[in-house]
Image 1 (cartoon, rainbow, N blue to C red):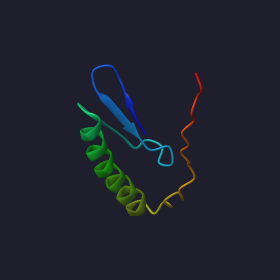
Image 2 (tube, rainbow, N blue to C red):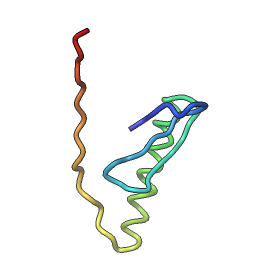
Image 3 (spheres, one colour):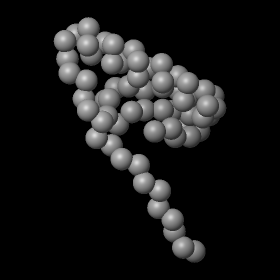
Length: 65
């Protein structure tokens, strides 16, 4: 998930609580969250914790004006 946060962009992963990143642009936030996901999963494994299975879903909703 990437959201505009005023002066930058914030990225987070609903399936990995605590996994966040920021960037000046959406593209930078995406690059940073990709790296953060890798570090987060590596840390879970090093700590002997399970990596949660994906459970989030994304849907776009069209709104008729």
